[in-house]
Length: 171
Image 1 (cartoon, one colour):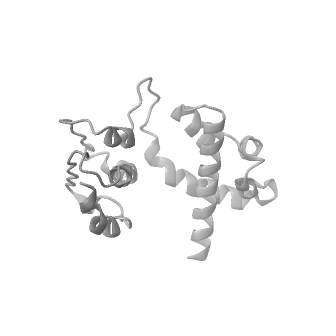
Image 2 (cartoon, rainbow, N blue to C red):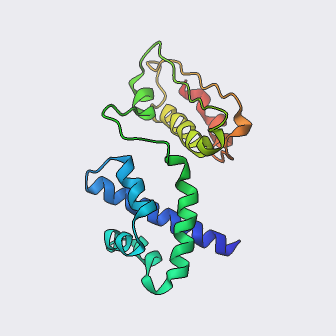
């Protein structure tokens, strides 16, 4: 278990550092981001992340460890592969905070792709839930319904229980 925790933590550190670098470089292209994480050599990725806390996990002296970390990272981000670049991005957070009346958001997936998209849909649902609470408590807020079909098909949603008891006041 401890070894799994190490590889998971290392993979998250590389993912986060890569994301921060992409934001710093103002490169918001998902295809470039995935290409760097999935296809760059260990040396190329180390060079990109050399000034980050994640660089330690890409040490050339620990080639087998680095390979295991990158394999774990690959498994974690597999759900991002279907995403493509767009000129008109959609933000769940911005949509909820806008309070646009009379609109609906469906987070749906084709049954054949559900397993691969499960983590991504869980993240989207988490984003929606936290965005509702971010709006704050106000009589001005429009009522938002969060209806979840097939909740059991999502990954474990640790934030769900505490959120359910708190979210009612946010409407």
